[in-house]
Amino acid sequence: MDRSRRRPSADDGGADALFGLEELRPGPPVGPSFRDSPAARRLLCVREIHAEPAAAASPRGREVLARFPDARIVDVDSHWRIPELHGNEGNAERWVRVKSEVLVLGEKKTLVTRPNGRSADWIAPGASNGCAMACAYCYVPRRKGYANPITVFTNIGQIIAHLGRHVARQGPKAEPNQCDPAAWVYDIGENGDCSVDALVSDNTADLVRAFASWPTAKASFATKFVNPDLLLLDPRGRTRVRFSVMPPRDSRLLDLRTSPVEQRIAAAADFVEAGYEVHFNLSPVVIRPGWEEDWAHLLRQMDDVLPRAVKDQAAAEVIMLTHNEALHELNLTWHPRAEEVLWRPGLQQPKLSENGARNVRYRNGVKAGAVDAVRSLVAAHAPWLRIRYAF
Image 1: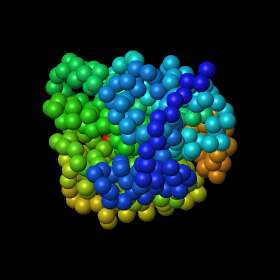
Image 2 (image 1 turned 30 degrees about the vertical axis):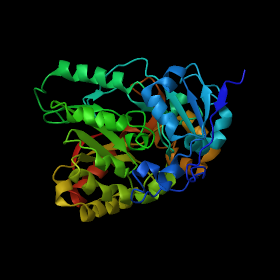
Image 3 (image 1 turned 90 degrees about the vertical axis):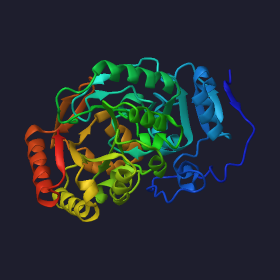
């Protein structure tokens, strides 16, 4: 039975343009918000929405459907069980097209906040899963199988209520740690990019507003996308944005459909002025010929560009590349050049990750030497950048 349905078409001002593998370079907001701009539509020109009926009928679901009035709606029983997407090997050849043209609406059935201790004290139940960008090393598609578009969880009220109860149970933070000296830090974007999610729905805005009202807690998310709409919120210092940066030569090869690294760095001052805490992820560090020289150049650029207001509150995470054989095989179908630097069997060894996945990372001695090298480069070229942790 054909479970899809088509709504009456509406002119959305050119949203049918297909955005390929080139970098997205968003400009100033056009109209009421950046997410209504041509640049945003190039990243997300949604033609098909797979939706659980309850998610589609919810207030947040109706808002998302209204944003993409020309999209074909396909009813699904579960946002995880969509044969056309998950497990469909043919999607590997249209990896970017799926990310650009497909959305999924579902409800987050299990709300669990997990301890972390690295990027954050806690990993919050995410308000999304998947991403419209196409970073070749991303860990999320390892579990989703051949397609990784954004899944929006529409029961954002339940997610925020769960977090509010969790924050209340913790009480004030008794002792400082490397996550934060005073606040309990919650990573709200483990399996997606909250800046891109904000192009689709108000989930990110709702989370920023919620944490702004919780004096003992702080939200945190990593991003490779500069979304000016986030500057219009009022985070009151309770949301930490971690801009992921790497040498532009690596980013142009590996960070497809993201904001240029130079733009991420330049945006830091605006975000601090808007009331965010801004940190940086030096991530992932990819070992290849000339990598140390390129990282030194990037750190010097950061030192030259960033104002004192950013430097005084900045900190960094250093994350060495982790890869996966299944993702390696998938990448060979759509972006084999990336694997020339990501897949280095002579330098890598098996790794059993905390979530049970079998991955590969740099061999112990190689990794330790690279971490020491990054620390030395930071000390030499950006001594103001405190490294919170490195692994």
